[in-house]
Length: 76
Image: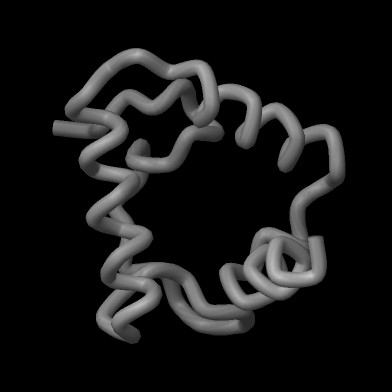
């Protein structure tokens, strides 16, 4: 659990209300679309490699619509 809390903080997700964060995690755990999951995987890998993602307090390199908060639909 400690590592999850550290990840939430490092990504800046600690700024979200708990109900929004829980909803996003539930959606991520239940989404079936392989392309959406692959997009999330690539974003996560880039975050851990220091090449992208949204560090706490930093600018986001993500395009609008690529996060699970909007239903996982990617913008065109």
